[in-house]
Length: 85
Image (cartoon, rainbow, N blue to C red):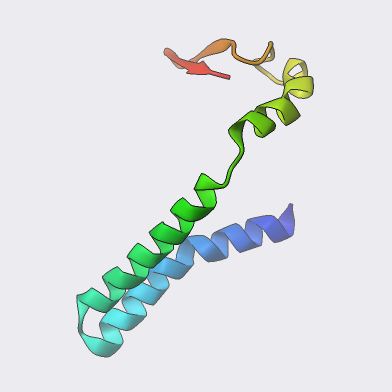
């Protein structure tokens, strides 16, 4: 988990860092906005490849071991908001 956390923190800072570097070096906000747009497009492309049904099937055997355990598809109320699990 440590390496995954390191990579996620690095990727969380990368777009902002590149935006500031391009803005400071060129004085043009457009280049920084292009970088931010590129990161969002890459994220959307990666998110579109997630197989939600496979993820639910993978998690289903362990749902009873979770804090708000139950069967897949059961709604759980957390903080007054109903969330479908």
